[in-house]
Length: 141
Image 1 (spheres, one colour):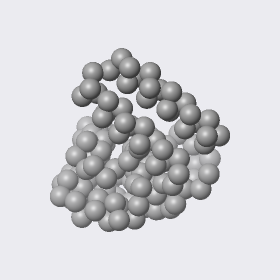
Image 2 (tube, rainbow, N blue to C red):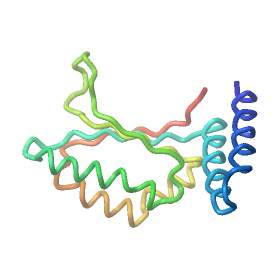
Image 3 (tube, rainbow, N blue to C red):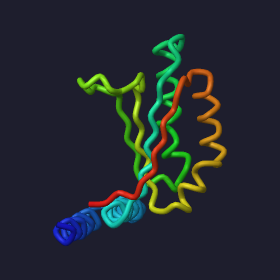
Image 4 (cartoon, rainbow, N blue to C red):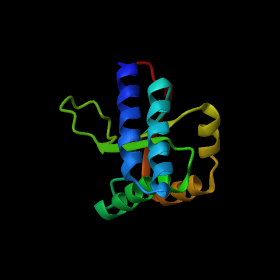
């Protein structure tokens, strides 16, 4: 599977490289490099939030928007995704939002945590946070 994906990525680079201006080639290479790193090993930083009852939907959206901006501000973030709970099991204990931040190493995560942009995000989050749950793990495939 890895060889098939790698071959597909090489073909994609070649096809795009033939059509793209030189300044776009580095962008394509960076995207492909990130995907290959994710295939080989990935440190997942999972963050779940339970917001205060008094926080409005607008307050919560400001937090989400601030978190979504971090990948463009902190270059050690390899990938980012998020969503809201929709489990029918009723086991969420009030946690409504889940965020996945992917790093290629523990060192990169250690750069992220005290990063000024991350700290600024925590300042936006703080007034609305009731509980947080964080789990970091090395993804195995």
